[in-house]
Image: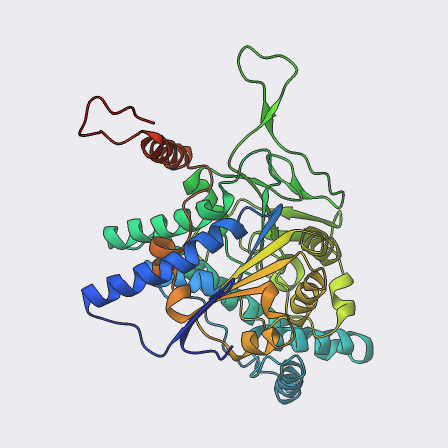
Length: 430
C-alpha cells in the first residue's frame, strides 16, 4: 500500500486520498463513507483478548493543540561544554543508526551522560562540569514538560479547556471500557508528562501500576496482578471485577519519579499536574533524582533498573496470542520498542493498529511486517478530533445501544414472519 497523505487500511478495505473535502456537505459524505469501513473494524479489533495501547509524544501534542497550548519541544540544545561537538556527533550517529533521522534532545542526553560517566573514570574534575551542564538542561527540559501541562490545565479559553478534556477522556474510554471479565487495557507510553493520569482522573478510571503505597508510593519489582473487585449486594462468595480499571506502564520514566540514593529506592512524588517550575518537590539536580530516560541505542541499556522490569512488562503483555497493540502519536523512533513490536507480530494471531499523522519511520517499519496483521490510519484519519468524533467505536460497555440493536433485530424478524394482510377475509394466512 502506498502511503498517501490521508489513508486507511482496515481489514480488506483500503482508501488513500491526497486531499480531504472542505465543503461541509462533501466532508460529511466523505466521513460517513469512511466510517462505515473503519468503525466496525476497530470495534472488532478492540474486543481482542489482550488489548494494549502505546502512546507517544504526538498524543500530548494533539491534546495541547486542542487546548491552545504548545507541546514540549524535543529540539537539540547546547550544553556549553568543551565536549559539545563530540556529544552532538555521537547523538547524530546513533540516531542515524536507529533509523530515526536527525537527533533530538534525548539523544543528546544519552551521549552527554555517557561522556560524564567516562570522565568520572579518567578525569573526575571535568566530569563535574559536564554533570552541571546536564543538570541545567534537564531542569530546562522538565520545566518545558511542566509548561505543557500548565498550558493544558490552565488555558484561559473555557471552550478549548472543555474540548480538550472531552477529547482526552473520550479517547481513553473508547479503549478502557471493556467488560470487567476481560483482561484490563494496558497502556504503555514513552512520555514523561502525566496527561494519561490526568485523563484517568477526569474519566474516573483506576490505574494499576508497579507503585505500591499511599503516602509515598514505592516502585516494586514484584509484578503482582492485583485487581479490584466487590461483592454485589445479596450475593456471598461471588466477587465481581470492577469496571474502569487499566494498567499503566511508563517505559521511559516519568516527571514525578525520583530515585533516592539513601535507600536505593524509586518513589513517585506528589507533584501537581502543571505545577510551577519552582515547586518544592522539583529536583535541583535532576540527573541524580528524576528518572528521565534517554532513547537507548544499545539493548544493554534497557537492563538497568527500573527499565528491565518495565520492558519485561511490555514484552509479556503484547507477545502472546490474540494480542492487539494500538499506537497513537508514536513515531517508531525507538528501536528497543520497535523490536518488541516485531517480535509480537511473529505470532500469527496478533495485530497492530497504527494511528499516525505522518511519518517515514512508520512506513519503513511497516515494510518489515505482513499487511494482514497491520491496520493503518494516517493523516486525517489519525487526527485526534476527527478520530474521536467519527471513527473510534463507542465504549464497549454501551449496553443501551447494544440492547437497542438487538431489539430492532428481533422486531425485524418478527415483522418479516407476520403474514401480510389479505384482501380476502376468507383466504387463510397459509
